[in-house]
Length: 271
Image (cartoon, rainbow, N blue to C red):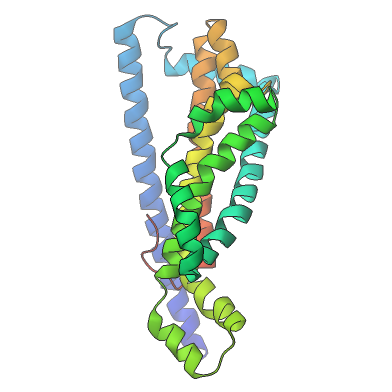
């Protein structure tokens, strides 16, 4: 009897999760439908297809770009740069954030420099980065690493400082080593906040890649937007803009899912 109870309880739970997913999907689809309707009405009112093409014209342009492989090519380049930037930013920001969160001396030395650089927009570095790195992959990756670094760093520091002191005191009382305390207490407690920082870092880096590619890259979606703007091919410009939004939306959903998988104990940790 006891073995059948979990299975009996699991079925209603799965049905409840499925119903909740369907409700959320319905809300998202209705929101998109309202947006497209407003876009269509505004395009009809404007009457200038170069300034504002209709959703149908943009869909046709997207189909053409997808058919000849250009859309996938530029999207893959931008996505690859983004992933590389997030990896580099994570390797730099997370260890430094733990060091600053655990050591007041380290924070005292590093925090002034962080607060000096943090208000400077990543886009402001593009002219200097263009002079140093030239046109290529390095410039957009540098800008994205810079933009992603600070949200990850600050959230990591906040996560480490927010660890329950009772847990740390209990670990010391039981004679647990500093390394084991860091691994089994500090890291799990700080991870939800670090994941929020990763989502913020992704959002900032994905927005920055377009600005960087507009000037300093020979490929990517930002480059494609500027290229077709010069040719006055607005449907393709809007098509790439739409893809940027869709990729960002789907990637944030994936990061939320990853956050739930990695931190199932942290209820309410999402933004």
